[in-house]
Length: 143
Length: 110
Image (cartoon, rainbow over all chains, first blue to last red; front, side, top):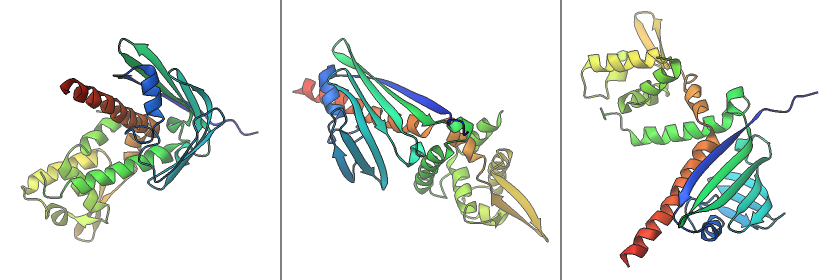
């Protein structure tokens, strides 16, 4: 019997200068910069429970199924891409009112554990991609 | 310093990254490595020492000449330091947050 792969969770929090419902709607609007659906070469997005998405960006396909969609409160969907190494990970975004703004918390769970050597590829490719760009921006004569 | 700090220090300077870029195409002699720089040779020597300390280069004697080559393995330490999705979502949310901040500033100006 094969042991289940170890997974990890990434949590990111930001305070957004708009009320929760507005932030929720913007998060699902592919024209808003920074959303997971922006910069798409090809996009299929149906953000209702059991609706699917397909996001192709820079040649990398991402697939998922929405499992929770509560406007202004919580959005949850699965997430599969070459960087999840075949694992079906989960993205949960919660929106909480704080003053005039919204505290937005994104939890990406079920990710391959890079520290256990299971998912080096994703971080590695990403890093090397950035490294390449860094090189391109740093001429040899710069000192 | 621990190994990760050594690697981060080594890649923190544009000249050292340029050296890595050059060596990633294949081993080279010291003077070939130094050639693109308008700087003193001892500055290049110092850069090479830091790259060597990080394990990013190694020297190999071939006959009378010493060739310097690039080793990518230590960069994996850096890649593992921050998970792909930690970077991905941080960048996305920074952009998203900025979109609202900019919009609010524009509204105030009106």
